[in-house]
Length: 393
Image 1 (tube, rainbow, N blue to C red):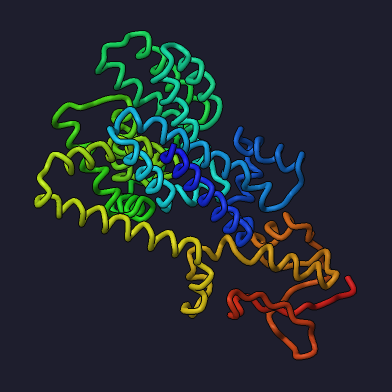
Image 2 (image 1 turned 90 degrees about the horizontal axis):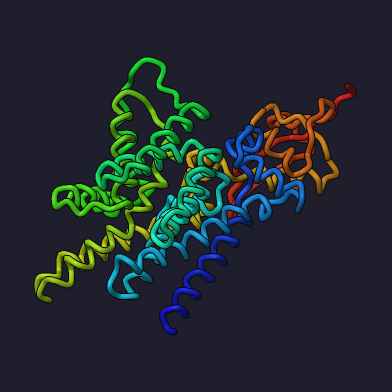
């Protein structure tokens, strides 16, 4: 009972922090482009916005729900791998602190949905014998990311000599590639170090390197199961493709979440089989990874304070998700309902908040002292300043 109380407490605190952070975000240009795309994910988000109205909480609510359900599914799945229920709690706590996971919970991106659907598939696969085929048929219409699910399942079927599953996964992989395609054109250029560095950043260096080690170690000792094939296939393919091209990492990264139960199982097992005096290295590893996660979590959630130490506001990694909402509300408070910003990206972003484009009102660089000023600042530091110029057009 105490375990489920702690789990509920972790989930509730996580939910509160995420909602708090959503209030600080504006829609980004990348999110605007995603909403304008013709994908099942964009159709879902646009349908929700049409039904419930346009605001940041409604926009990001689906991502938040995907994240919360993913957390619960990971806890349930991990109980099959971890001997102690407290280990599953630690895994859940670390999961919500991962930078990539926290970002997928509040940014409009298919990655959060893919993580949830992957964990849901694994749960169904483990609990029900044939129902998972229905999910495989459904996923092929959703996103290209699930082509990696069919690829991993294909190798898993070969390993376990499951002919029906092998044929189904092969056909669905081919169908997914035909429907969505994957761009491999262009001049080959190496991006291996870039991709590897991004993996280190979004999963935290210690945790990603340990995941890499666990996947390799399990291959050597031949402890291979569905989670291993799915996560190892996606990681291997992403690194292999990075030798010739820059890849969309959001397609591959969600699959590493499936390696979390394996990673936790390996860590806690190797920790407990050792005598107490030989556990110091593992305690240090755990403390270091947790400290880095907490540090990254603080940076992500309190990124507005970075403006106080940065000379150029654009150097803040979260700058692209700031400004638009505050600028829109400032303009509306001045009874300016349309404006020309001379910035196509920012123009589209403020339109989400009700400020349309027109040519008779323009925001320009401060040209004269008598012009009305529009300034946006965070934590007392101005990051955007323009003057309002009216014309008779």
